[in-house]
Image (tube, rainbow, N blue to C red; front, side, top):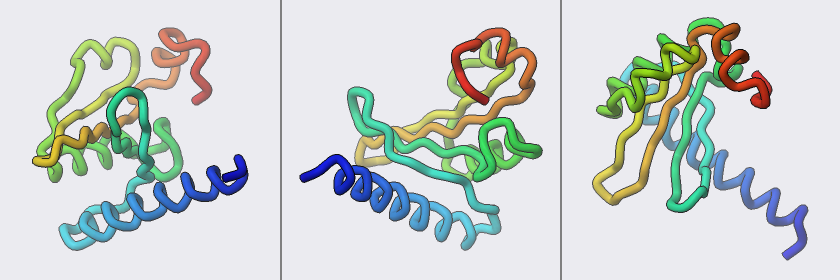
Length: 116
C-alpha cells in the first residue's frame, strides 16, 4: 500500500471515530469534538475542540465530554502549565483522552516546541 493510500486510510479511521463519538454525544446534547486514533504503544482515542485545543470554550466543552464519558482529570499539575487532560478506559480496554489548553501563554512557556 502506498503512503498516500495509508494516509487516506488513517483519515477514514479518524472520520469513523469522529462520526461515532459525535453521534453518541449529540444524542446526549453535547456539541462535537474532533477525534482521532493515536497509536503510541496501545491504541488511544483522543478528543479536543474541533477548532483546536486552544479554541475559545475548549476547556468547558472538553469538561462536558469528560463528564459524559466518565473520564477523570489525568494530571492536576497540567493546570500550572496551561492545559487539562481527562483520561479513561472503555470496558474493552481502549484508552480515551480529552485535551484542552486553558492558558495559551503558560502552555507555550512550558511546551515551546508544540505548535498551538
